[in-house]
Length: 219
Image 1 (cartoon, rainbow, N blue to C red):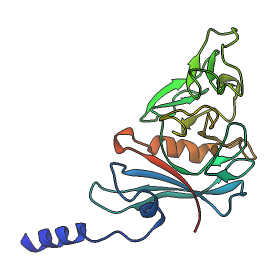
Image 2 (image 1 turned 90 degrees about the vertical axis):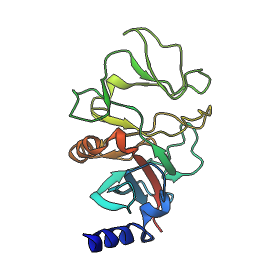
Image 3 (image 1 turned 90 degrees about the horizontal axis):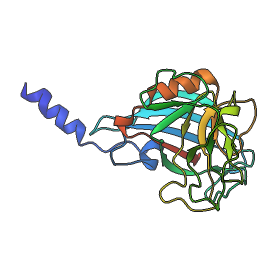
């Protein structure tokens, strides 16, 4: 058994290929990665792929490619509230997934949306860029581009939160960046997939694997 053991140890020390996921997330605790790549800063669609790696290994394909829709104004490394761009960068996946429909079988905590569930998009609010619940029918204390989540019956049938501008939250940098259901056109800054592919992704994501989503220009 010595030879196979030596071979295994040798393989584990080999450098990983210079691939897109290796370039974007070369090390750390993440063992799942969603990549979204697009051809130019003005493009409103891109390609989404899934990747996985063992604790001491290299990134390997795990799903896709699928067409994803992006912001109506393309992508940007300097997104601002309401500018219509999808942010470039590497982000976490929020601890809770949401949707107006019942839990489709995700491994994350799931909250089924109800009347009074909002996402605070008011840069002047102390709870900017976070989920908030107010009593159904009451006007929330925040204004701006805040979203009544339960009213979005198609886009928010299911969604995951992309951890943009959340640690720390910078007023006016942008809010409510989600991975949600495709509605047939560009988004306001989110990433969207057809429902079948989205549900596959949401079920695949595992909080114990420290998943990340990387949005980048293809090179």
